[in-house]
Length: 139
Image 1 (tube, one colour):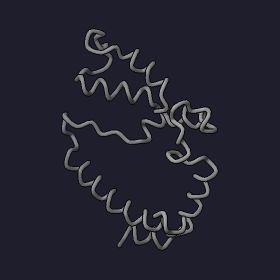
Image 2: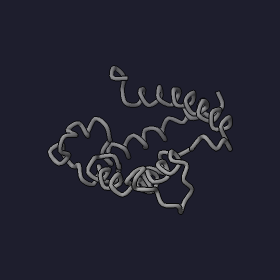
Image 3: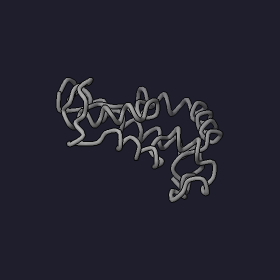
């Protein structure tokens, strides 16, 4: 992808994404309703990182809400507090990391999260590639 234009790279990603999404749908159907599988979307982490982290912990410990997580098993509040110290939550990363100097040890933030203007530009370019989307939806 590094040797292609952004437009061509996005086209390649659309084709690759189609295969990945079809695989994800197949797995979601296969594991739907299985009590040993927790299905989360990335949107859930972006919308409410701490709430989703609590959900994951409860699932792993097999504790239904509102039962408290026993502190002798895991100090959930300490885990949440520790997560605030690290750039795990994308909202916090974007707010805090305006330059590599703002990010402490995570100096390569620009390589991991596109800034909002670049993200908008990529979305615009993706929308203009209708032929890829047509192939994506109906190959």
